[in-house]
Structures are given as C-alpha cells and as structure tokens.
Image 1: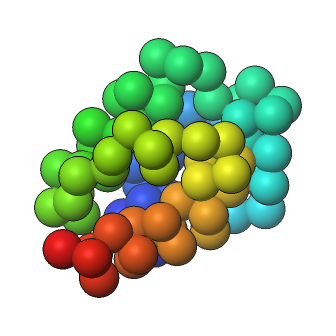
Image 2 (image 1 turned 120 degrees about the horizontal axis):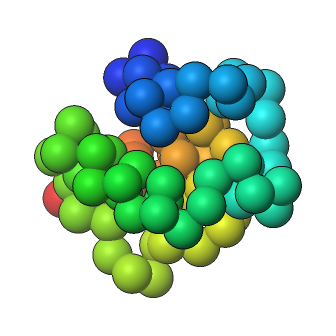
Length: 76
C-alpha cells in the first residue's frame, strides 16, 4: 500500500490520499492524472488494468485502487 501512496503523492502531494474517498468525484484526480496513475500502477505492481476496470469506483480512493490491484494480481 505504501508503494501506491508514493505513486499518488508523485502525482499530487497536496491531496490526503489516506482519508479521501472521492478523488474522482471531487476532481482531485483529473483524466491526465489517471492516465499517468494507471501507467505507474501497472509498472509498479506488474499488472495490466483493463479498460473495464477504469471506472470511478476503482479510483475514488487509495483503498479502492489497492483492492483493484490485489484483485488483478490474483487473476494473473
């Protein structure tokens, strides 16, 4: 999880990723940030995020992202 927080802080260090649950809905992450985030997550965790997984529910919080990462790692 710490690796994910580090990736997120590199995108925008001013966001409280540990407590925020509306990163997409409140526009704390925009479309360009999401593209960079997906690439960084795929590289760091050695997964591929399919287009069907790129939905707000999977990116509204760090916890949701981490759960998606774990699920995708299990499917691999």
